[in-house]
Length: 162
Image 1 (tube, rainbow, N blue to C red):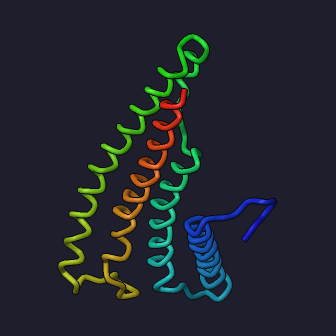
Image 2: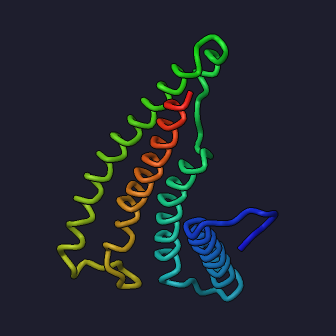
């Protein structure tokens, strides 16, 4: 799929579909609550699940495309410090991201494993295994780490050629 010569990745398409489903589900909730006069018992639970998945996968893809919120404190150094030093600072920031996200990956997978091990725990309305919404965090962390490693490799190659 292309829009203005831009090819979308499978992750971006996945996020767009989940976000569209979240929008339509919320619209359905409003219609049933205020037009029909009877609210749906399962829609809020599913919307919450979609929101969790969009949040964690969206965070990973925001990191991949450099769309996350940043504080550009080091821009003051641009022009006053060599490009190699700025690249080394970027490498340190990526390594710190990998370390912190790996810690969250460990903790979140440990938490998710408790729901996987106890297969009888389900959501209240839809009876979906609780592992489904809980696995969004470790998978989001895993994708963030993968994207950070790719950024790190590219940056190290750039520094080597300078």
